[in-house]
Image (tube, rainbow, N blue to C red; front, top):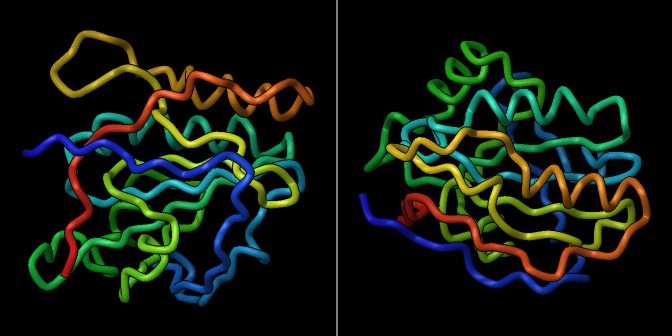
Length: 184
C-alpha cells in the first residue's frame, strides 16, 4: 500500500456542490440537502483501504457525537470499481449497514466530485462552516494502522469544536494520509 498525503485545499474555499447516489437510501442526494446547520464534514473514504478500516468506528462515533450539535457528516467513495470491485455501490451499502453508518455513503462514479475537492487519499477530511466555506482540511488524528496510537479523532474534533464555539481557525492543519484514490 502506497502512502499518499492529501492535497492542499485553501481555507475559505467554497465547498463544490454535488448530487450523488446514496448507496444506503438508493436516492440521489445533494450537498445542499445534506449540509449541517452549523457545519459539514465531508469524508472521502472507501471499503477496502486499511487506513479507513482503522478509523471506521471513530467515524461513526464522530458523526453521532456531533449530529445533535448541528454538524452533519457525509462520506463519499470515488474509487474505480471496475478495478476495485470491493468498492462497488452494492458493497458500500453492505459496509454502511454492517458498521451502522449514521451518515450517507455516496458513490462518485464519475470521480468528478473527488476532482472538484482535489481529494487525493482515503481517508481525506474537509470541514465547512454553515456557509459551506472550508475551515479545516486535514487528518482525523495521528493514529495509523500498525501503530499503537489510539484512534480518537482529536484533530478534526478540535476543528469542529472551534467552529461550534466561534474560535479562530486552526493554523497548523496536518494533512491526512492514506491510500490513494483509485482513479480510472
